[in-house]
Image (cartoon, rainbow, N blue to C red):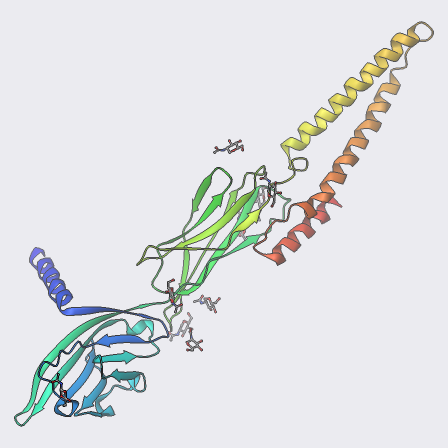
Length: 328
Ligand SMILES: *[C@@H]1O[C@H](CO)[C@@H](O)[C@H](O)[C@H]1NC(C)=O
Ligand SMILES: *[C@@H]1O[C@H](CO)[C@@H](O)[C@H](O)[C@H]1NC(C)=O
Ligand SMILES: *[C@@H]1O[C@H](CO)[C@@H](O)[C@H](O)[C@H]1NC(C)=O
Ligand SMILES: *[C@@H]1O[C@H](CO)[C@@H](O)[C@H](O)[C@H]1NC(C)=O
Ligand SMILES: *[C@@H]1O[C@H](CO)[C@@H](O)[C@H](O)[C@H]1NC(C)=O
Ligand SMILES: *[C@@H]1O[C@H](CO)[C@@H](O)[C@H](O)[C@H]1NC(C)=O
Ligand SMILES: *[C@@H]1O[C@H](CO)[C@@H](O)[C@H](O)[C@H]1NC(C)=O
Ligand SMILES: *[C@@H]1O[C@H](CO)[C@@H](O)[C@H](O)[C@H]1NC(C)=O
Ligand SMILES: *[C@@H]1O[C@H](CO)[C@@H](O)[C@H](O)[C@H]1NC(C)=O
């Protein structure tokens, strides 16, 4: 076991020392270098040049200056071009399956037959840029709570990213929300789609910006979604606790005022008449419904004021529709 590991490491070291790293974007062109020094200034007429993939399939062959498609594997036909100046083979329309190691061989075609004079390995890695992450707010059917339910997605990338998470920024704080990312891989292109869906509460009293962040694997770079801004809710309609407090406060104020008035009137009238206690309740009731009406008026303005979900117009529309439906 130990010996085998050592051997693997040695092989890696040896191959690493001898091979070149090359990177290509999905659907674009990759370079497979050969780095032939040509110190003896051989002409192409004297050389046989070819490239093989890790399965020994031939990508390209130049036989004494003439392209020889005879040995080329069908999957590489029409996908390569040879750059004579840099001794580099270009592989077009790179797919994820094309990642791997390649070798170029150069033989000298002399009177005594073929003599190998140069060999080079290169490792091709393939990348596909994930689309910019996109946040979708899912409207909550049950009333406008402080719970935000959202999904975020990014498509058609490679390799598999490290993680996707949500950043919640307020004026004085940044909170990170992590969850398991869902990935689906296209079985033909091998590209990944990534998404997360989560719900969390937002502070109602401050403006918040929600970002979705995709952390990529090889470079550890971060890909940010456009921000989703949610403005602070006007304090009056935010349910349920402040509502009750306001209601009770209104009642208390009314009660104090009415009691004061009644007390004053009673004092005034005591000299002439006895007070009627049933009137007190009536006044309180009238005052109570009035304050309810003012509250409703404020609530009705709310859908216009809080422009939620700037990140998704459709959802914002249905969300405000829901709200007015519940309030009407
Ligand atoms: C590949 O590139 C071509 C144009 O170069 C484009 O039409 C095609 O949509 C691309 N395919 C993918 C899967 O990106
Ligand atoms: C290499 O050979 C070509 C002709 O085959 C000649 O034109 C060129 O000057 C030579 N270059 C060097 C560096 O010897
Ligand atoms: C992919 O992203 C990198 C870095 O952001 C950029 O340099 C490159 O041009 C992009 N490639 C494609 C094919 O979009
Ligand atoms: C809507 O919000 C309430 C809390 O106000 C929560 O219990 C419920 O699960 C949420 N529903 C959805 C679909 O997000
Ligand atoms: C968030 O929305 C999704 C889709 O409507 C739903 O399946 C999920 O239960 C919601 N989560 C919460 C916590 O409400
Ligand atoms: C952020 O600021 C608000 C007032 O602007 C304050 O009430 C709150 O406690 C602060 N939060 C933190 C985490 O400092
Ligand atoms: C990935 O997303 C693209 C664009 O939204 C879609 O066309 C494709 O079907 C998705 N692929 C998978 C495997 O989910
Ligand atoms: C790709 O996956 C789909 C469904 O998962 C399957 O129907 C299809 O046969 C697969 N194609 C290949 C080439 O494996
Ligand atoms: C929230 O943002 C709006 C503008 O989008 C601004 O008018 C308002 O003052 C902000 N409120 C707070 C509490 O920062």
